[in-house]
Length: 238
Ligand SMILES: CCCCCCCCCCCCCC(=O)SCCNC(=O)CCNC(=O)[C@H](O)C(C)(C)COP(=O)(O)OP(=O)(O)OC[C@H]1O[C@@H](n2cnc3c(N)ncnc32)[C@H](O)[C@@H]1OP(=O)(O)O
Image 1 (tube, rainbow, N blue to C red):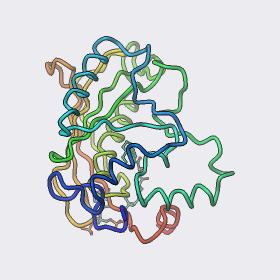
Image 2: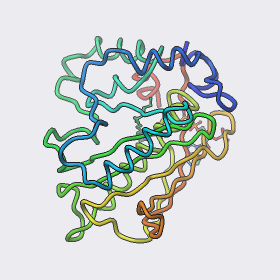
Image 3: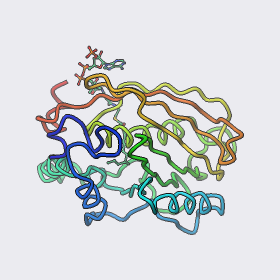
């Protein structure tokens, strides 16, 4: 089972540890309760569309996999863990009613986080094509630093989940090098650098799509949660 194994979807190299690639594919094609927001829409700029098409092309030989994205957190969690979250979902549906996965909490296209993620299993690498909308403004015309932190946390978080299963962010350290203009497209490029027991260390760079501008660089530490407890038990027992 996905979260019964010692790591998440990825073990060494290309092989998905703990579950077979088929299960991974099954997860990708699993019917989800909410729509996939990581698909092109009319708010995407030509740059966003071109970059997306480039990564879709690289998915053809299986090197990269497009990662769907939903407004319901539970729809992101593949395999066995879904059951845990499913029970969490069933257990307290009332409390959860109206919750949204933060980066997908706006329905108007183009105003918030427009993004699409692609995973490279063999490199333990997750990239995110990110086009910040006008509702993410910090300084006039530029993305708020917290929105950059969110897209970095989600990208490294997605990478950590695929490698180590159910994880939580323990540390996220960001150096902001150049502001990100609203409406521009940046590439958030993250990878797992090291795993020590339950500790997953990652690094991440945010660059302009021509690679000429480094907007931010980050390191992150994610901790693998105890898979024998439900997520709710795990968090409330701390
Ligand atoms: C499926 C994929 C879909 C992809 C797209 C969707 C992406 C979605 C992604 C969404 C992503 C969103 C993600 C989010 O937003 S997660 C939300 C933000 N994060 C949190 O709220 C987490 C709060 N913290 C905790 O719950 C606990 O502290 C955790 C669980 C993290 C660890 O508590 P736990 O009791 O379990 O473990 P431990 O305390 O024994 O620590 C274990 C070890 O780790 C070391 N340590 C701990 N903390 C730190 C630290 N700060 N710096 C350095 N080291 C640290 C510690 O020294 C020890 O080391 P050692 O003594 O063993 O050597």
